[in-house]
Image (cartoon, rainbow, N blue to C red):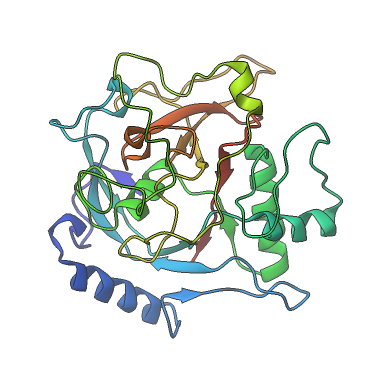
Length: 290
């Protein structure tokens, strides 16, 4: 993936109608020998790995539009090329999916932290735990799983939408799990919460209950922030931060959450977190290479 490149002959997804975006997804699935754009691999036990949706290659623009009310960390808006098709988790990784990994490897959640169950998103896991889970999936399935980059995540979330959200410039409770009592102040730092709020009752919901985007991905908007593989940058024009020796890496998370306002659920919204950070509104989603 090469930002700001223009030589790769892939479609501009911002110019495509919904039917064309779906047709592009079907063609990408067929090119990878898949009968359907939604599929899953099998673990060595025979159980299903997380369900995946094919995301076709294309060009798009990432970051906040000039007219969008947004903090400077989301600017400038830039063109990018996603050069290769890939597959992304239809949902955030669920607690029951992560528990299969925990049983196989001996991983255990910290006793003092909240742990959910079933189809609730896996929370209170570090980025390093998420990467270890992806490595385990890779060993189990013989395919390559990893975390998405920031640009891959935003491309998949938008699914051809140039608007603030995959569904337009506004969202409501049928679109996402978010906090309607919180708004956006671009002058305030994002994701800062009183310590007591971190231990409040978790407001996450079971995955897949609301409308998907045009490529069939659920909960890209709201529910839990999702780790990416990308190091944090102050904005879209500066180099990644480099932590001091022995310090945790700051990374980009995307998607907003049940705790945050609608503005934090925009496709361009991004939040600085640490690779070893644990939180009840922070999870992840996988990418599987095709």
